[in-house]
Length: 464
Ligand SMILES: [Zn+2]
Image 1 (tube, rainbow, N blue to C red):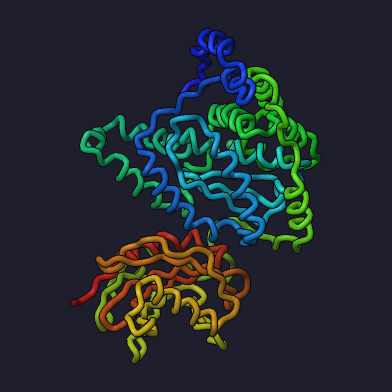
Image 2: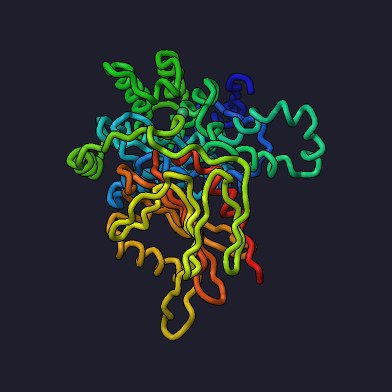
């Protein structure tokens, strides 16, 4: 869509109101401003679909980015985030905003549709005060408010929509078919992360407004950008987010339009200084290569896109035709590429690349059969007992397995070939216990395997 359009529709009315309600105007200041009104771009998705898509992409984030997973830091970011969220433009859909810290020293942040926002620890460590941190968070929050991720996805599919999927669009299925396409490749769809210059400018403007309305000094938006620009090492935030000088000018203009900062505007808080000190005291993040480009040396060949069917005792599942399938007497199936298994060690199945399909017998809870959540929790606990490196990254995402309700759980561990391992666990309750599919891959190769894993999980059929 074109440049941000500028409206001043309430200006005259505002003057009149000021006379009669001076006290109110002084307490909110919101009536006396001349802010830029931004209209969101064309979008085939509904706000509810933004959430569904964002959730799905967020489930893949732990595999592509190293989450800090520190409750103290995440809780603090969430508090700052909620202060901002209380001041998003009126009429904005109430997204379930969630702010989490990524263990990376680069000054960067990103937002997924539906309110899933990630802030690098580098932002906390480099901000001078809470207002500067809040500025970066407000910018990301604005991307969610303006629905830039799904607007970009809409745009990237625009040609197809124009050429012939119009039928599907009329039938209301364009969003659904786009969803399927979005997730056919990378785990976190690139369309959600690649913002246009206009998107960035809009997020700066609306972010500055949110920052101001939440009672922070809006000047902090320009200040953190200035700070980033002055750094010797260009921040990644800027390579994703072009032309800083122009952006700072535009932010300054918006600060002028908003009028002066609210009385007692926040610059810094004790809590920010404590959290900043705490984050700085944490060990440096491990060097982390994002995503995979081809396969690592010695790694198995990428999964074939042609599938065979494996028939187990009571289920069927497909697997890539360059893999092999092996069933144990207890019914557990191992599906893996040649070279994907290593010598099993204590607490480790020896699967470095591959999929385990099995059934776990959960304990009763208070004399009752456990719920799906409870049975899954028991399975994860049992995995953790046998391997203390297993970390729970994300749990209780709804899935379907074999036509029944299922849960997705994301775990992280240490790969038997070294480095970080990503484990995607899908579970569903059956008469004889908790049926599960456990997909295992070194984190660096996750992208190359994500498609095969999804195809396998979604292919499961029960024979009765
Ligand atoms: Zn941005």
